[in-house]
Length: 105
Image 1 (tube, rainbow, N blue to C red):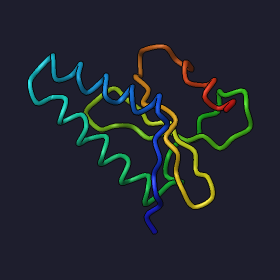
Image 2 (cartoon, helix red, strand yellow):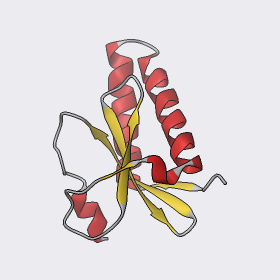
Image 3 (cartoon, helix red, strand yellow):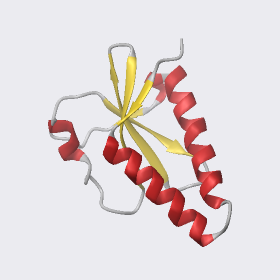
């Protein structure tokens, strides 16, 4: 069963910023990044438990992550009932944990 996927506004802004940055580096790379993100989201929508649990958060929520192929990004998400909520598009080497306050709301 494929679950519906929602994306937090802050995460959507991160995604757009990253795609624009990649496109400035090389024309078309932003679209390649977005395609890789789409594939990762399709995978987690079908197999939500396949993501790796994130254990370094202060709240007791089952937050998971999946990697984005070919790019140094991971997607942090929660499975809520029969839906998935994307919390962040995290760069592997920048600002670890910056998105944790989003779990408070």
